[in-house]
Image (tube, rainbow, N blue to C red; front, side, top):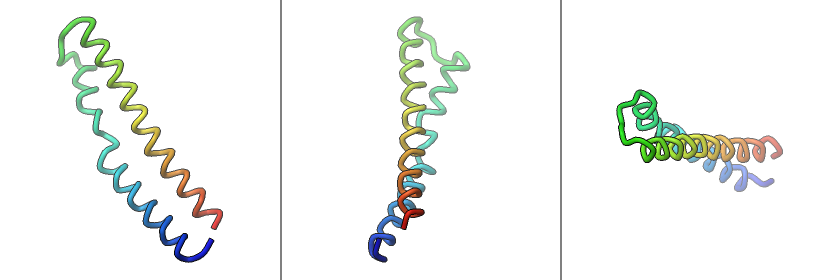
Length: 77
């Protein structure tokens, strides 16, 4: 890997980390409110809460996966 590619990967890693820091908690407040029974609505609310939980986990997993992929690529350099 040349220096330009390594610099690009370091920039990409920095950008992904920034996005992670800014957005990992995007669904957390709503999810916690649902957990604390702040929202009502019967089955519809429970269905929404389940989707929110899945999206929260998916967002965190995607951010972690992106960071690992770039970190692994930089280690190979």
